[in-house]
Image (cartoon, rainbow, N blue to C red):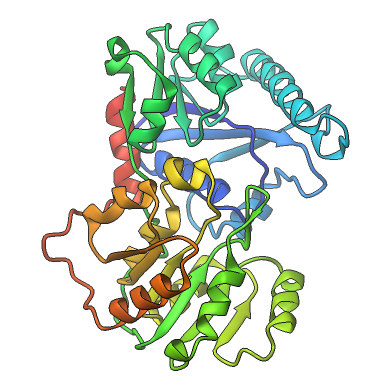
Amino acid sequence: MIKNKIYYITYQDFPANTANSSQTIATCKYLNRNDYYTTLFFPLRSSNSSDNQEEIKNFYEIKDDYFSIKGIEHKTNFKERKILKRLGYIFGHAYWSLQACKYVLKNYDKPQYFFTRSDWVFYFLSKKKFNVVYECHQITQLRKLLLRKAIKSKHSKIIFLNEFLLKDSKIRHKYKRQYIIQNNGYDSDFFYNKNTKKSKNVIFAGNLIRLGQSRDIDFIIDAFNDNRLKDFRLKIIGGNEAISSSFQSKYSNYKNVQFINHQSKEVLSTYLNESDIALLLNAKNRHSMFYTDPLKFYEYTACGLKIVGANFPSHQKLLKYKNLYLFEYGNKDSFIEVILKTSISEFTNEGNLPLIDINKRVKNIINFIK
């Protein structure tokens, strides 16, 4: 079968130990499996950036799948700007997006679709009337402006992760055929229930810092020092070896808390399946409270874990899947009580909405953009 072409142009860094980079790679992988030959374009914007095919495949544990990868030069380095860093980032993003679009259009055959997580790429390609799909994970004032201008092209479409993103985008209802709400999913290559759970084992998997803010790890650790949780064991998996070692040293007297540096998805899946409860941790900001649709939630659930998270509106939207228990943010007693309640609850699929994997998610997106 002849595959359609999709060019995925994104202002992200690869390789990187982030959920958003993993989600992009997984999307490319499953687009390719569904007969949409995909090329991923991204900026070589840091010393760690690489478009070496084997390095990317090894980092993201891609085995038999193939999709093209092309890094494009980034001529401004916002990370080195000490003054007006935010404006530097916006300028760098806009300038690279414009140059990247020009580069791709000049050097590559026209694809059936463009795909992006960059609002600027979406805007520039929409102005040219190309078939372009933008996946929206965050809303800012500038982004709202760009989206409202770009959506005027009948060839432009938007994927929102949840209802809050759609509402705050202020996209008018008359464009309803040009947008969908599509939640995240899990990669079934790695995450599934092995039924090897151990009671009172609690796990958090993810970076210890998100969007420049702490995930309130200290609050959680303090709770596990409470006598009520003395029989529970907490594993925190994420960050590089230096960060994990630093936390382990800081809390060396906490015998029921263990820090482990970043692990491959295959190894992480084993850790998840040896646990009983998983944590969703985020700082209290607008993104965490409203816009996030955490990839970890779907990975945790696929592995058969009961999940404890802060009582944020974004997490409340996930209650439809069951097995999620919410505590009041910053309230130690509330957190401990919810952990104790969750530990004696049973994981259930009864009355549960079906949890989609990334393959199903990509099929939904293909049906939307066709």
